[in-house]
Image 1 (cartoon, rainbow, N blue to C red):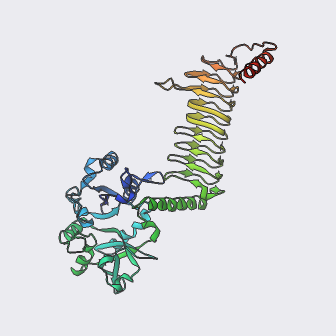
Image 2 (cartoon, rainbow, N blue to C red):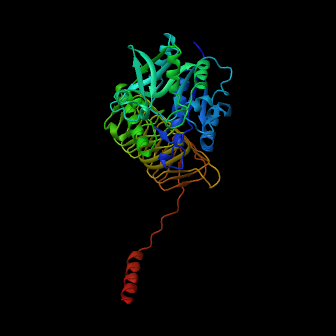
Image 3 (cartoon, one colour):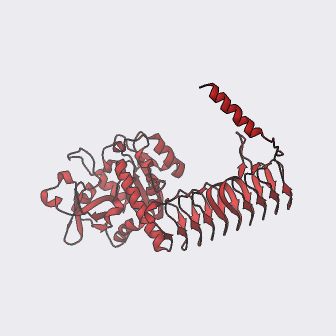
Length: 450
């Protein structure tokens, strides 16, 4: 296969977002817009990826550098249009003579499957391949002017189009593919004699067509090109992303009782045969295996839920939670960085942080893993078949042996041997008549104040 590279245009200011966060770092499905674009490039087989940034936005530069390295960044300064932006990547791609695809950094719904037909057109002989869509309402988009059936002869921006051209429904997505040397050669010939005084990437189409080169268009569904330029459009993109992921999961055999109330992340993995009740949030890094049940109002992040486990309602799984087969994590239970063994149960009102719970163990209501001393975290380990009485505080580092019991209300600060009973609480003291005397004294005091 011909070597591929991608240029991702991310130099826009994003002023309409009206946010201190740079536009391309806003998230859809828990994933930054720029990362969605990089994901597409990688899945298209791009061995080299260049992200074109403006002179500002140090946060974006740091984000891209952390993922791809500093040498994957090109700077467009000053911003003089999309054609100028692609030219800014030329030096970074010096010596590269393979396929080059241009992508946009704010199209979170774009998929590799939508872009792949461009390479099919290239393989079939097209010198330049452009990705378009048929818009229900084409206002605001550049139009693809196609003649003789399938020849793309030029792209015209709406503000410069004739009334006849504005009636065309075939619109430009901003995505195209061509051999890198040809694309840079065409861009070198692009001028900026237009309304905005910018170098348009779209002008390479007309130049290529006039030079007798083959220019063809592929089309994808309009919704995959939904851009993000405002908070409202970000919300629309999020809603579209969620609808798509929910449908994918249900088509694969996942039961979502009220799908519109379930929110997913870009990397959520839910196996067929899982039941998800209403009002559940899957943040990043969650995998749920076949047969598990996620009950209502639960929040999961960075967690693994194994087959047959029941989570919730009102449970919170934080990063590092590993819930074993057939285990139960019930209402108002929080689990963080704990491996919960097969069949273990923590059915209500508990905090399990840092450590492990053995298979078949039972964690009583009100149990706390006291894992933090204000400076460091320590681990608590509960053995197989152990029974932790209600309202037990396990002060880490501590281990409760297999089959051991702790008495309700205990504060356990030392290791407990297997099959032992540990009690750590003050003796109950009863003072006969104290409550009656107390009430009488308080009532008398209150009467004296009136």
